[in-house]
Each structure stands twice: as C-alpha cells, then as structure tokens.
Amino acid sequence: MFDDQRSKKIILIAHCILNQNVKIDRCARYPGAIQELADLLVDSGVGLLQMPCPELKCLGLDRQIGKGLKTTIESEDTRVAQRMTEASSIARCHGLANDLINQIREYHKNGFEIMGVIGINGSPICGVETTWTGDQEKAAQGVFIRILDEECRRRGIVLRFRGIKGYEIPQAIAAAKDLLGNGARRCGEGKGIANGGSASDPG
Image (tube, rainbow, N blue to C red):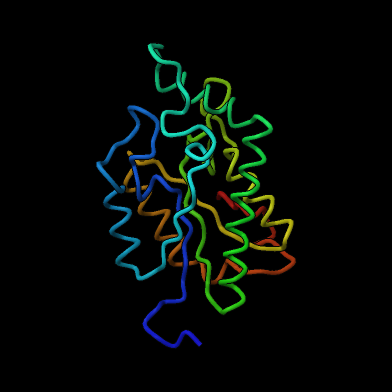
C-alpha cells in the first residue's frame, strides 16, 4: 500500500516556521515562512506536518491584548505565558496534542517514519530547550511541547525534539539536518525512550 512517490517520512514543525503571520506583534522576521529552513525541509523530500498554533487557538491572533496598552515583546511573552497556563488553555493544548498523537499513530501503523519535532526555543508555548516564563528565558519546555512530550511518552511513543530560533539560521539548519539524518533510527513507537533519556532528548 502507498506504493507511489511519497517518502513515507514525516517531520512535525511549529506552525510559525511555515507561517510567520501567526506570530505575536513585532516578532515576525519573515513575510511568510522561515525561508532557509523551509527550503531545506522541502528539498529533503520529507512530509511537513505543521502543528497548530496553541496561542492562536486559545487567544486569537492579537493574543487578546488590551487596546492602547504600551507593551514590549518581553511583557507580551510574559502575559501570554501566564494566559496559557490557565485551565482552559491547558485543556485546549491537551486536545491539540492528542490530535497530533492520533496522526502520528496512524502514520506509524502504516509504516511511515516520524523524523522528529521542530519547536521554537524561547517560546512560552513551543519552546524545546528553552521557554519564556517569569519575565525571562529559562531552560525548560514550553507549555504545549511539554504536554505533547508527556502524552507521547505516556503512550510509549518515542519522538526526538529540537528547538530553533528564527534569527539563528545556521543553528536552525543544523538542528533540522540532525533530525533528518537520524530521525528514522531514533523515532518510533514502543515502551522505551530513545537512548534511555527523555523523549525531548535536548542534547
């Protein structure tokens, strides 16, 4: 089955990698996609599973900012981080994560390879190695990535996570190449976690 031109390889990517229009105000660095990273992924032949943007789903494009308020990027990140820890936002993130896991299991069932997940470091929601909380960037996972990681591990699904920043293109390219080169060997479904570490495996 599926004996055609498809690669049968999938990589999950944060929504804003392909669509910078979803970013909070003053944070988009590209008109559309992060061009260099998108080009690499498309040229690799891997299928791109664009994850939903939890902030957009929960708070809308304007993130429900009060009209006329003077803010900074940092103050907005802090406010969004706080809003995304509310019970309703956490429940929505669980629902989004479960939908992705259902897709992952369907791909696994049909012999496809999940190469890994690319998130956005420094994001309060999609950070992998670092997130934003308490007015500063800290070494931890963002709200949504943490939930996705935990739910995958609970179901015995091994995924490899890597975080990038849109203004650190050489590092972003290296992270993507790492997943593309090693994901098939490292990702799958089973009882253990790859290399005996956590599913996020930030090393």
